[in-house]
Length: 397
Image 1 (cartoon, rainbow, N blue to C red):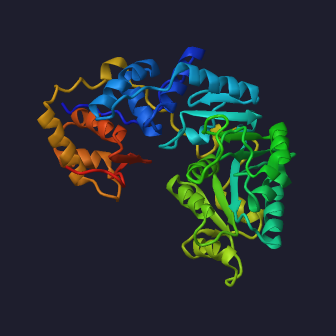
Image 2 (spheres, rainbow, N blue to C red; image 1 turned 90 degrees about the horizontal axis):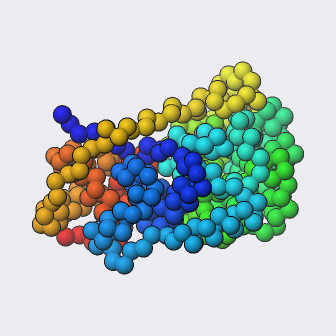
Image 3 (cartoon, rainbow, N blue to C red; image 1 turned 60 degrees about the horizontal axis):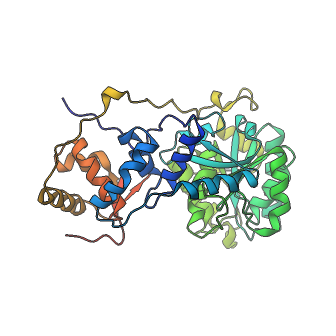
């Protein structure tokens, strides 16, 4: 019988004690442990504590010297800083975790939240656009966001200048969600500090980054996938041909969300991205009716997101007797040969993990640990949807 292979994206059972939550945080913050690796380690070892105990040996086997997991002291420091900032740490699978994010392949295991989590029970629409928005674009964002809010929708955006700020400001009293690129307690840009404080009263601020982290350029694409992931649809207002807003739109398409765009003048570079989206099939938006029409019938927009189309199917929980048996120990020569076979088959373009395993003609339970070794060694990159690619700086042979 073929051995069963458990995907690294199966959400584990959430922590039920403070100690378990602390172990989750330590594992997620440990060096070279990203979201996919976190889920894989949890699936392979059954708990965060067991994964933490195994991680140094896994790293050593992958050629990473002097590896140490994130310390308990550092994790406790982050928890204390979060409490001091008035934020709460929520884990996937718990009631306060956004259900719309739970079905993403790269759903954050832990999120820092600040504000009113009950707002997540209402249907959400994302609104993004240019930071240097024109007066017309800003006016469109304000009016569209307000009209949608009056019909029971929550607007999610990224608290950036321009369109994001206009959308948040016009819905701050009815409730809006701000997804932060840095720590949930670090307001960027600083001129939105007062707005961020207002958002907490009726809405929510969310971040997957540690408390106190100042946003860097690399954080924004990760932030954008959460904006689109929270929403049933993404509305783009004034976006250049190469912009973060178009990254959010691409994320939305990958996540199965609707993409809509407000058209602009052909000579306005700020509208070129929106016009491209419409050319490629995005729904054209003139008003709130166009957005609602694109979403299809919603009997009661204020009902819980459990009733919406984005409701995820609860993931299967592997029982103890379904875990794959440990593979026979390979010699160093056999391990090196398998490393080379994997690296030879991977390139910059991602391929599905199950396809790679089939190409290798090896059982999944034998290949999975080697993939984890290469991932921890920085030679391969795991992307959403179970896709693998060769890391840019990977060393061959």
